[in-house]
Image (cartoon, rainbow, N blue to C red; front, side, top):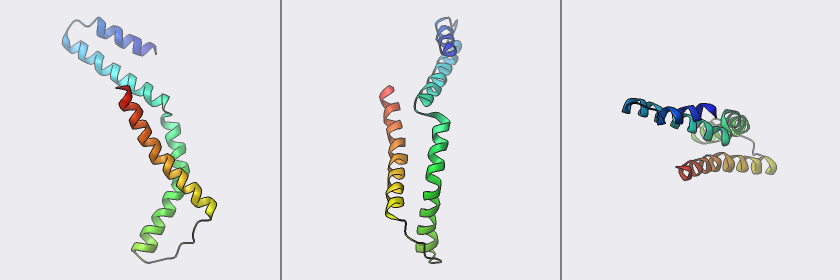
Length: 107
């Protein structure tokens, strides 16, 4: 937070336009970093990827290997796993959309 305050101070104390532009760029960078942290940041993204990876692999095998290439038969998911896959897909893509909406509203 101190770095953001310093960037605002640098913009206020800028002696010329290039210093003001540099301060504005730094402010935008720091505000973006702060917004990403508020929305979860890298750790949340890694957890989302770890949860989604098995279902991505399963779906890829089902669609490409079994259906497109006709090289195999994949067992269907149990109703519980199918429900979990649907929820993960909804949250994964819906979460990304929600983040986009939040960022758009903040501007």
